[in-house]
Amino acid sequence: MIEGEALALACAEAAADKKAEDIVILDLRGISSFTDFFIVCSASSDPQLKAVASSIRESVREKGTRPLNEEGGPTSQWVVIDFGEAIVHLFNSEKREFYNLESLWKDAPRLRFEPSVPGSRA
Image (cartoon, rainbow, N blue to C red; front, side):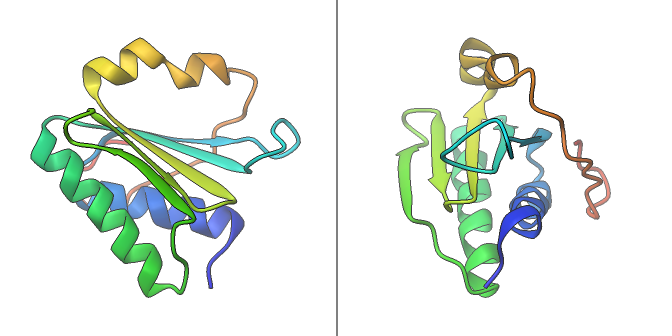
């Protein structure tokens, strides 16, 4: 089972593997009572959004952890995958700009993330 910071990094890496864009990990420890990390990233199309969400679920499942809940999908242009200690927010670019989660949680430090996949953008 994978937890905490390692879980957040695994989610971000799985997103990068499918070429998610602008991957940000917000460290909410000490700020939020409902989760420790937000992983926020973008997909450029509905098929990519679906592929990124699937990659995240599968990668984390292989490490022994399953989502507690999931909402949204390609038609809503926003997928939320709740792993408890980490919550992934995957948007298309326009929805991400509209909701602007990074601004809402601007006091949260960003966890350093360097994707191991060449060509990915964090």
